Length: 308
Image (tube, rainbow, N blue to C red; front, side, top):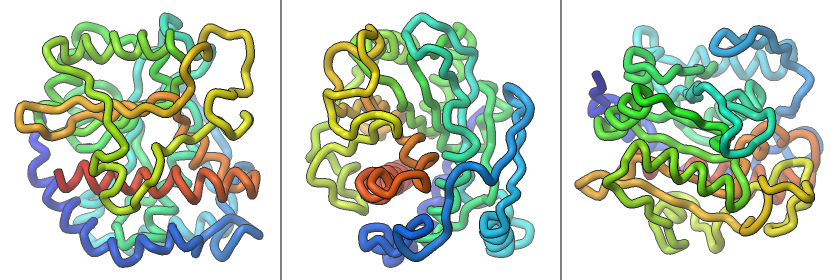
């Protein structure tokens, strides 16, 4: 069902030349509006419509449409799909682990579009100008060796979906899971991933792990708070909720295959989607989290997944 060897080789070839350009992120050579040179990628220029996997969006902002046009022109004719495409995994939500009304579509389409724009703008990576919503189905997941999943506190995989995700990961696919907080939610998320791999350990990654230094060298574990919250670990903006009790410091966990290749990265107490979605709304949030952490760490993750 899944054969990602060629896809991963292509992604490595594409990513390696990007290293020289990646320093643009660290030196703040991009930024929304008055925060620095570049486009203003914020909310308000995109219309949303549809539900579930049929959700659609419309870009009405001229600057953003110009960026989409540039990205389309950069694609080699006949190889439009042999580029990085951000793929968001669709799942059927349940209330078992907390998360209130949030689900697989949290932060979309703004987060997905902004991430693609930034990858194209500050790296030499060839990026699809759109993104994909992908159901947990072999015929859909087979086209995307990197998938992203959010609001995992409401994740409720069926037995068949557990088997599909397991086979996808063992066949070379990579999953990034994030956007959940608190002890009870982590216990729920942990149980869901143990259903996928009951015989494999979910390993916590120390700061010394190469994924935190593969392109950008982090001196601390990255953490993206929700844009509406206070910007400090262990001090969320919501109170008196079991969803947010206990440990709120960042933790990163991984699942490895028999050859010590990372198959899944689970980002606990992090909200990368907000780091991408809300970059144009608050200068302080942009500088401290979007520019300094959310984009650079995703580049680290993508580079590590493609080269290891």
